[in-house]
Length: 183
Image (tube, rainbow, N blue to C red):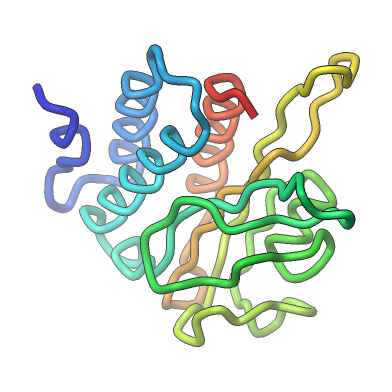
């Protein structure tokens, strides 16, 4: 098998099966690789191809990627990481928009209608719903405390594009990334 085969999903695969494949393929790709850029890039590709293979509304995903903690900033903010989709906002302050809220609170944000979310940042006007999952990892000197090091951000061009199934599996992916990368 070549690495690119990891992105092959059967057409019309169920959401559950697609996410299971994402997790299995990601775990295999991360073996022996701890670089977060490399692992996030492969995870973004896996997610993008998984969504394109599922039925609606998942096929309407128009952005799938990551923002990472911007360690060069004086203020807590995220900076754009690997993704698939249209160009995106480069930085997002903690507490601002869906991504910034997930980063500040350390909790998943499942937004059925982005226009109803206070302070939503419209990087792409086609986005109607969004899910953002924080990646929490221990850092040297944190005494075992897990902190936000990145977020998974997925946008959908239809209202109510995500549910608890997406939430559960993306949180599993976040946990895998947290332990598989040197942040």
